Length: 151
Image (cartoon, rainbow, N blue to C red; front, side, top):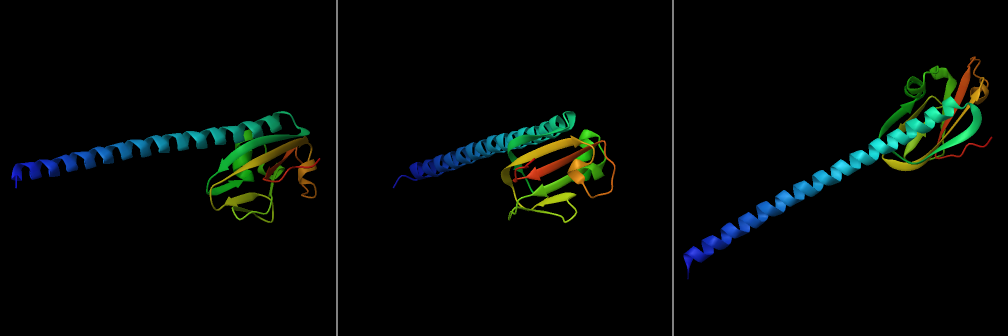
């Protein structure tokens, strides 16, 4: 039996294992990079649609398609800061889903797991989208998660 040959085979196996691990780390890094870029693009599309609805408050529905929502929440307060209107002038609604829940006041949506959905925005002059709140709004907006807004 050739001992030198057996030692060489073990070393070659170690080199192959290290190379395989290095390739796996590189592939996972690339996957993570593209995943974060997708999330950034989705967030940008969400924000652009919201701003577009606020900039043209004519009641038209603006759709942000295939938005990826990760765990966390969106609130009237966080949305209002993006578009500089009072938080009491933004209402949130959503279709029934295992992935999120909207609070009773329509001021927040809690997202329990990542999901891809359409988000619909509509803004109008006055307080048409928040009727019954007793609040006077120059512009009122409705953000609807997964549920189309019917005029």
